[in-house]
Amino acid sequence: MSYTTQDVHERVKKILYSLTGITLSDNKDIMISNRIDKLKRNCKFSGDIMDLLKSVEQGNNVSEFINSFTTNKTHFFREDFHFLDLKDRVLPLLAQNNEKIQMYCSASSTGEEPYSMAMTVLEAKAKSNISINASIIATDIDTNVLQYAADGIYRYSKSSKEFPDWIKPQKYFKRRVQKNLAGEEVLIKVNDELKKMITFKVMNLNDNIYPFSKNQFDVIFCRNVLIYFSAEDQNDILKKLFKHLKIGGTLYLGHSENPQDLVHYVKRVGQNIFVKEKEII
Image (cartoon, rainbow, N blue to C red; front, side):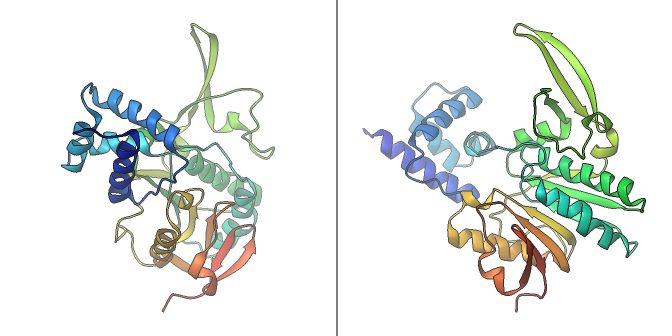
């Protein structure tokens, strides 16, 4: 049976939505074609692409499919004003209770965001000379990027603008120079103090139930991930996350995201920074 490129792309979109809830817009044709090539390489597959997609629908090569079609764009201290708020407002306030602070990163990607959260905790401790006992759960649906995050090894450039001036990378990373065909490359490896603060787990934000307790978290980062979902699904995800945020807890959203129906239950305290005031009835 003959089929068009558009037929393939529509089938990819349907499978991706059924597995992850992620919605691909109509202007993603070039990206989909590139990701199809990636899927074939990951599966070491040289046959008809429709046969490969049928195998995914039957439950085979599912991880390879998800890992091929999810997007992982991030860097350390992205939208750094959120980390400043965490350091200067949230953590000193929470530390007054002398209780363990639990934080959640809902889209870990390759790990830069949760490690930025961990560095912020240590900076808050040093700045305020207070005791802060904090842990971070970081999840993603892509198993490849989670392994990358757990390894905690990154390329580094002296011209990098990723780290704000209140962070000295040498405090948190071991530096290693390695030679390759292109010359020398500087790698930085996360130190053990940061690693032990974070637990990386596989999780699908589109799942009906999340594996957390009610009101478990003091802080939730859900940034630059909702944009991959439809407006209706964004709202559903936010409501599910909200159940696990404590009253008085802080929710951070990405620059192009909004709290949807949660607007009636939160107080805005900064740029896409929201404090939970009451539960959803």
